[in-house]
Length: 100
Image (cartoon, rainbow, N blue to C red):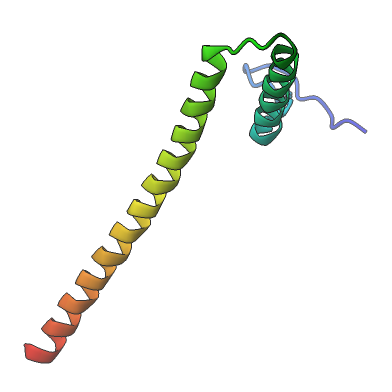
């Protein structure tokens, strides 16, 4: 049942709300990396029959392993830095409370 419409004598109009449509997109990074590995392994299997090695495949493998190790080290360093900052702040507060 719709509400009664108000006549627009004074320029007042009731507006309907705009429709909103959102289509979520899903990105699975793990699945994409798995597919890349699968493709790379298939290439290696095909190349092993012909005994050819591709330098690009090795470069991409090295880049991937370096980026993984670098990101792991970087997050570890950030966590260690935070812990040290918290300890320094707590020690400063304790010193202030006991000696002032």
